[in-house]
Length: 54
Image (cartoon, rainbow, N blue to C red):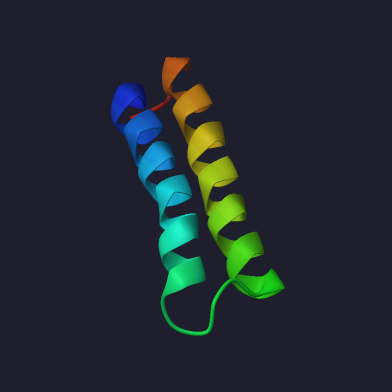
């Protein structure tokens, strides 16, 4: 499960150049949203080792 979240982090961070090229480009809000979501996924991947994790 943690490996899947790591791959999802990579996918979310690879969306940064796509967002920059399409639409309105990278705004501070869209950059913060994507990076924040990647950090959240990293925290969730780290929690997978806990006994109470899914």
